[in-house]
Amino acid sequence: MNILFLTSKNPYSDKPFGGGAETSCRLMAENMSALGHNVIYLCEIAAKGDIERAREEGVRLHGYNTLFFSRFVSSRQSRVLALLTVILTSKINILYCFFELRNLQLALLARQYSPRLRVVMRMAGLAWHDDILKRPNRKARYQKAFNSIDCVNFIHDNLETMVRQKLNELDMDVDFKRSFVLDVGT
Image (tube, rainbow, N blue to C red):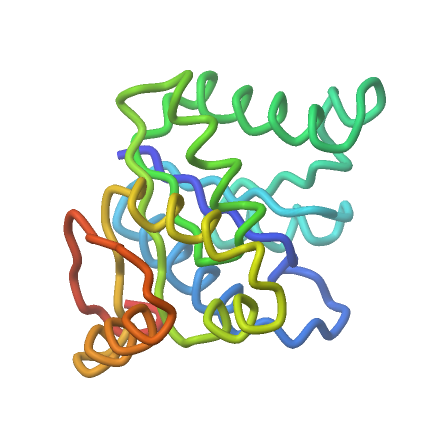
C-alpha cells in the first residue's frame, strides 16, 4: 500500500516544534514502512538532514520547499501541485492527516484529481473546537471537511463521544462515514 502523511510541521527536524500530532504521524509512518508499505511524508519545510533521517527509517520525506513547483507559483498553487505530483507519481492509496484545516482541505481537493485516494483524519483532541470558537467563520469549512473525509482515526475510545458533544455544542451537522480507534503510533 502507498501511504502519504501530510502535516505542516516536520517531525524529522532537529529543531523543537511542539507537535504531538506530527510525532504520532512519524511513528505511524515508520511502523507502516517497517511493515513493508511505501511511505511518504509531506510537510512545509524539509532540510537535507531531515530527509536523510527519514530515509534511515524507511520514509521518503518531502517539503514543499524541496519540490519543483515551490519556485514558480504562489504558495497555495505550489502546495496543490506538489501534493498532486506526490499522489499521482507515487500512486498514493491513503492520505493520513489530522484536523489541521489547511492540510485537510488540500487533501480533499487532491482527492478530486485522484478518486481512488482515501483520506483518513487523525482525531486526538479538540483544538478544532477551540479554533471555531475563536474564528466562527471556520465552522462551515470544518463541517464540510469532516463530512468529506473517508475515515476518522480516534486515538481513544471516549474521544468519539467528546467530539460528538462538541459538534452538538456548535450545532454542526457532521456524519463521519467510518471510524476506528487506534492509539498513538499504532
